[in-house]
Length: 283
Image (cartoon, rainbow, N blue to C red):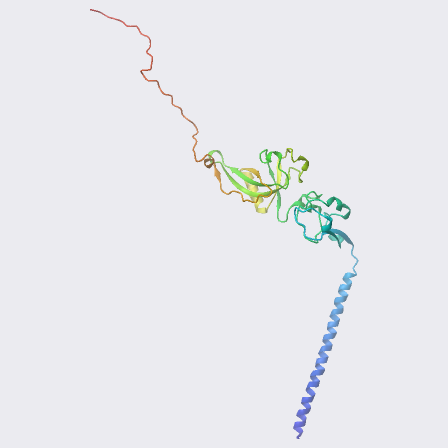
């Protein structure tokens, strides 16, 4: 066996050993940095847990609550959250009994803090808390007809019609449908004691989108608004199209004045005035 053959065999035998040592070295480096990273994360989370931040108890639904449901104790639970995040409108534990049995006025997600504004008869600190997200409150002046003789109540839904023009060119068009009334005058809750009696108010406040608020503002400038009351379960669309006076009267044109001609009596029927007959001459 030649010397070159021995050298080649010796080189081949050392190569696996070098690769093995290199793998051990890289593995050791990886373990070191992995351990270091894990220790850093553990220290970070431990520091977060050791922070002393004041906490407060809030009442939250244990399931999603839908509008129209009655608030029950079995659907609620208590959750601790940082005191700085507690809403001033939250229902405190010592006032829970007065909230139970009330009707939910807005959908509430599971785990969200329960607020007075979520309840139909709740103590809402601000009127804006009753507005649905993305909607605006707009006040409209009303008269005896538009107030439905004083029987209109908050939570009712109305359709608005607009009358514009003068004389024979007067027309009426549907403007906005299914607007929710959130206040009649200064009343924001249904007064069950006066459901059978008439109330007097000169304004109603409705929930509108920003675009509807523009239409309503312009409509009040150019015409007169009339509100029609809807049944709570009525979802039918408002009848579209404009109605004119001609359509109202069945396309019959009514003249402004009617000229009456009196018939003259005939000559035969005209009585002759009394006269004296003279006889001149004779035979």
